[in-house]
Length: 107
Image 1 (cartoon, rainbow, N blue to C red):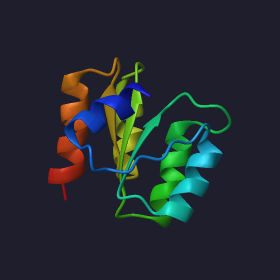
Image 2: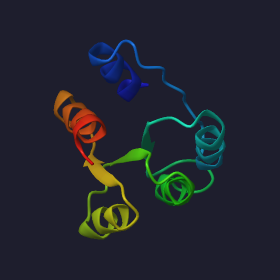
Image 3: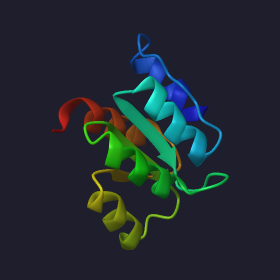
Image 4: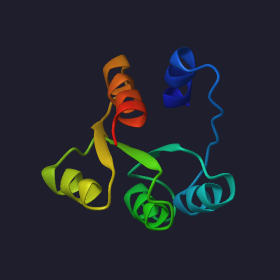
């Protein structure tokens, strides 16, 4: 909810969907086809990292940012390996700025 609030302050015209678990995120991505997605590593069911990897295997043009307090290199490298990035928690204006920049300016 915090990510949603921060993003909507800067992008009030964006439509935001929320999933309660990794499996729901995969289903939502398949059905709604969003351009961008944020994910937490720790989610009920499958991890956010596993969900992001599955989503990007089917929707490679979607941009996904994974948020985590666990910012070890292994997690960063795994996220990069399937086309995502990892942003450190806590959610702040700086982390949201990094996320929005990745969404709107990266190729």
